Amino acid sequence: MDDHIARGQQLAKKAENKLQCCCALFASNYEDAAELFRKSANSFKLAKSWDKAASIFIKSSKCHLKLDNKYDAANAYVDAANCYKKTSTKGAISCLNKAVTIFSEIGRHIMAAKYSKEIGELYERNQEIEHAKSYFEKAGEHFEHEDATTSVIQCKIKVAQFSAQLQQYQEAIKIYEDIARQSLNSNLLRYGVRGHLLNSGLCQLCQGDFVAFTHSLERYQDLDPTFSRTREYNFLADLAATIEEEDVQKFTRVVKEFDSVTPLESWKSTLLLKVKDALKAKEMEEDDLT
Image (cartoon, rainbow, N blue to C red; front, side, top):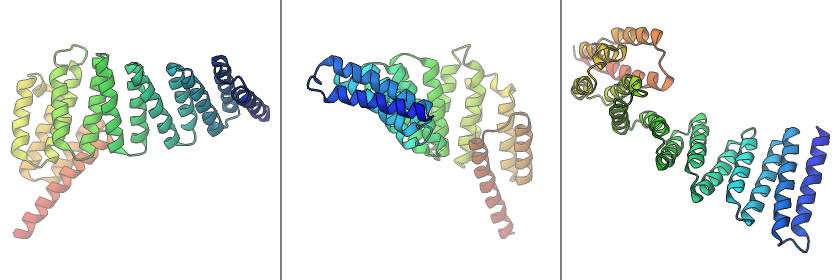
């Protein structure tokens, strides 16, 4: 471990000397320094000195920028971000942002999309949903530049999920319905339609407009005639029946039965809990009136 640190320090010092000598303006010196910094950072990585490794990768990136070698500069920022992931989410996001900016400038939209998505995932892990949503939107835009349809849809699905979590239900509904329509035209994506319509239906329930919800169920059957034969449709229809009957216990039973076969993601369970709480409140209100 100490040997790796010593070697890292030695290589970093050589790189600094390259930049400080009287002929430092020569391109070859920046090239040599960039490579020495890279080797130094890798030595610090072997020693698991993550912050130090990250800071040295950043120095390597700056050398590449001096040479207008933007692709290698962006990749050095990515290397720095991977080190910071061990110690500092904030540091990782900062470096990935710099990489995304550079990749965007040189037209490497797939790379920009990949790392925008990665930033979104880091924010999601920290439960910073608004930021996560923003970066998945950016990732989708970059994927669109390259006509990467499947990746665009994957990003939009996450944006819809985050919109639902942020109680931006109408936005989530629109995205899910748009994706469902688009997916019907693809044999590869068609199977996912039932899930998108289910998610849209759950958002409709959270809005508390039961009439709009029942109309949506009808529209979804028109959109995809096979939907009415799915478990997802039956789940929504059963939920609708329990809401109409104002039966909280039956609502709970319907959710448990569906979840036992098709486990619900936590954010969907949160939406259903919101609907259940509204149903409870209505039941209590009516009990008070009697």
